[in-house]
Image (cartoon, rainbow, N blue to C red):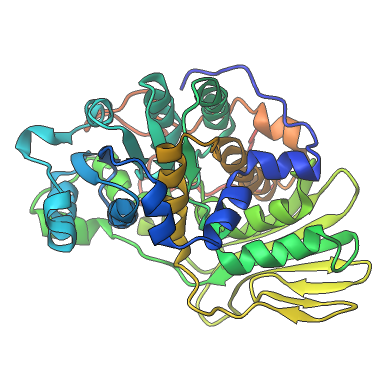
Length: 446
């Protein structure tokens, strides 16, 4: 990756943070309007959609984007992936779900490492849903071509990638592009109402946060199973791409790929990003040739400029205590944020009475902003919440206390020098088939 000039992180005011996270306003507005009212006001111009990255999440995002036909005409016109089987399977399923809203003939099905450029060129709105390591260069290209964008989270896997993304984010604002980021809690009515009350002082000043994604391994694709499925040996590049969750250049570790959701909520509550962190982690249980180089547990203490803390845990170990949740403690009470409950001078609870699915709502918000030409850009917050997760990973990998500024300016670049099926990624298995796992106290991350 080419390095770009870092964007200063700064310490945003609460008002400034909420402006940069446009969904906090747009989502709240939409939550009070019916789809019918929005559709009545919307433009009738057809919006052409391109999907880049045809795995499960990409297919889901494309389906949710097509559901915005209630606001005005939409059509999926192009798809891109490095794997033909992924593209074909996604296309078949999307056709079954959405029929004539899917119009992707052979000449608009693009394969290969540069396929994204061709798909982007045909669209008004681009969905970026490849593994996160590709996000910075694909986002940069979509901005260069002047497209509106929905990008899945996280938006990078290392400091150089985030700097590239932030530079493109600045350019997207200059061009007036609409950008949504798949941190769907910003579009979830229960979160919006709970966090608004916290910002209004329901539990006083926030002094501590606890955020968790403790669960089990989401999936793994063993090399032997893949080679049996495809009837051939896989190159190292193909193997890592098909088993991408377990390689830092592609996933960024599960503290980045999954736990970003909870970390982002903590940032949202504070209205700012941590200035430094420390932590510990490792591989205690999930060991083997097909589990790559990532940790199975992380524990991080994030520190904000007011010296308040966000305590973070994420773990992929079977048989342990599980929790995917966020909690806040203040000078006048506490909140179970993910449970939409506040315990303070006045107890309060949001009850889900038919709330719109947040995965659908985030696309309704984005497409409404496009059709009505409203300011809407979540790119900066997406980048900085990703960078917060990466800061945590850098602390657990190295065993060091690291500042956000140091992390953002890190020159450690995990992305391959060349993208080709016969090219070698930077992380390779040893003679025993095992990958080198980061070792705290020794591994360099800056």
